[in-house]
Length: 135
Image (cartoon, rainbow, N blue to C red; front, top):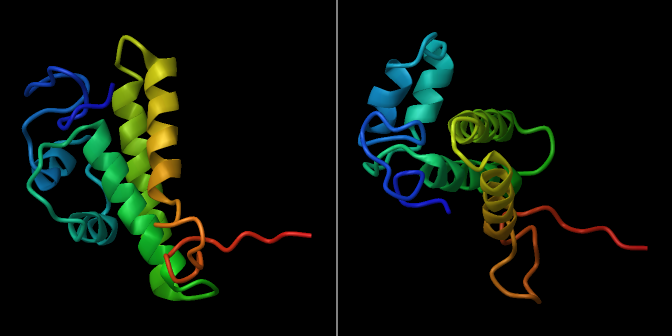
């Protein structure tokens, strides 16, 4: 459901993304994100065309960096902000798709999977994800 460019058959001008770089896509938005946020978003880099799956993957990467330094760490807060913005943009793209509900389910599953530890016995803090608290 979420192809490399954001959706199956995504092309430039498609509601699910296109061939634009992240910088071109962000600078083409109205309004353009504030410059401090824009700089943080562009740190995500990459040259893949902007689309739902690309934004989701970049959001997961930002969340993983935030979770690698838990607590009141300023850089972690910025990584959370970037992850939130990227997921918001992914949802905006999905809102224009023919299957919004299916797309959102796929997006959320992709994010959840991306935040899972590498192996069942791995320490979640070392993997960059939240430690689960049990009884």
